[in-house]
Length: 382
Ligand code: 13P
Ligand code: 13P
Ligand code: MG
Ligand code: MG
Image (cartoon, rainbow, N blue to C red):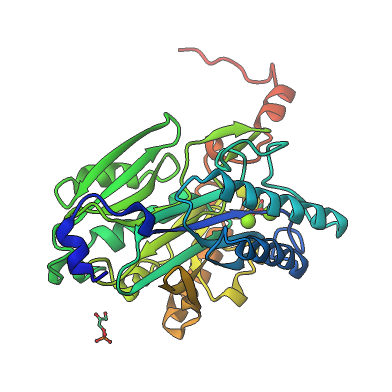
């Protein structure tokens, strides 16, 4: 259906015409250590998704990895939070875990924190970003996948892409985006969400987005018609098996062009290698380095954190692609800068702000050390 016709009706979209794009990911075992993905795990995922496509549960799929995270990119007609889709992804990750155990890969089943599947994969360990929409006449999308970081890492790029006219020219010159975008932000500690409208509430929005360990963008909507433009694997924090579930190595989907940021405007949001959390033992800050898929193998001090971008044209749900965007040499300077920042941060060794503040660390020896030194902390006179 031509977009103009669909828009004219506005509001209620014919549900049966919607396509759902789901990206579900998990670390089911690292090769070697936490560096990258064993080809055997990619094969397990390919086989599982091929079976689901044959059975018509999926329209199409791609398997990717960013570092040690296995990424299932899927299109289907089941809608978001479909139990059937989530269960199928869970079963694939469990099969991957068994393969990782056989191969004695590192931390096999790392993100599989529940004993069995129960209804929705969110909260069980894997990360999940999904959106449903009526496919436009041409539907270019970008899937961003990151390793050694957390969903808060997308706050700065998402603000740039959907809120900052110095990044996104379309906010100024494209009539269909000029009204701006609404950001849905989660407070992952208090488990609340708030919608903030840009540009009117930009300064309020930045109070929260600038604190990305607690406030994280979940989704972004176009104000003129409420269409979804972006969604990330941001979810409320659940403490499970001693780890915060869903904090790890996030994915992000962005729709582009024709009323959304251009492909190049979306990618431009990653041209500055800002500091993110999640490097080495999930407990250090480092620069987010955009790289090609083949370079998504974080190595120096298990990093620095990486992000890859796979572009697809949807074709009635089929995935035409990927185009491996960050392989482009125009990101060389970003990478060079990221390496300089990585070197600078590394020189801090165990000192903040390279090391995360005590409250944010995935690993900590603080309780043991405090116990050991009990009695040696002398109360000072007031
Ligand atoms: P083309 O003229 O190559 O279609 O590019 C349009 C555009 O807006 C790119 O940002
Ligand atoms: P992942 O979260 O990518 O498994 O990395 C864990 C880690 O601690 C690397 O140093
Ligand atoms: Mg790992
Ligand atoms: Mg990882």
